[in-house]
Amino acid sequence: MYRVVIGVIVCIGLMGMGSIGYSADVAKIGLVDFQKILENSEAGKKAQSEINSKGKELEEDLKKRSIEIEEIKKKFERDAMVISREERDERERDYRIKVGDFKSLQTKYTNNLKELEVKLIDVIKEDVMKIIEAVGKNEGYLLIMEKREAGVLYSPTTIDISDQVIREYNKKKQS
Image 1 (cartoon, rainbow, N blue to C red):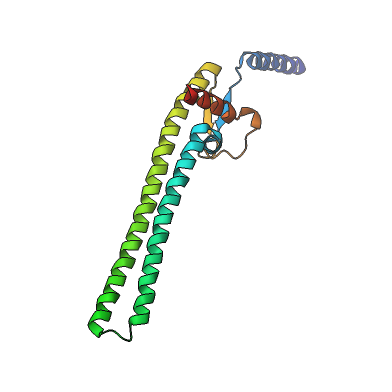
Image 2 (image 1 turned 90 degrees about the vertical axis):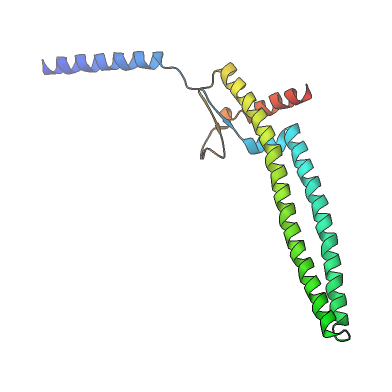
């Protein structure tokens, strides 16, 4: 009798698990690698090019100013023994002011470049988020996560939809 009761319980349990398995929906999860989108999309390449161009322009200006400051320093060192103490103090003060201005300008340029980068990337992120939302709704994804920001440590490549997002984004930008 004991064996019969256990057998019936096991059978009922197996039938219950079988029906659960058939009724469960498969969760469709996608990953997006935003860094990959920035590197491979047309808008991302254009933004990177603009940032690099502006960076080179600012770097050239700083390099030119650095050369001017170096020339002032060399001239001061050359003339230091033959000029009066007052003139030497005046030139030294001017040199320190120019160095301070240079460092201030360097900080300003760095901040300007970072602001430009944030501005351009934010525009791309906004556009990409709209596309991700549309892809998620149209293709029935339960969840789409950003690969790097979300802390994903493992993911099969079959759920990475970055290439699809890049194609959609490039199509949208061409229109």
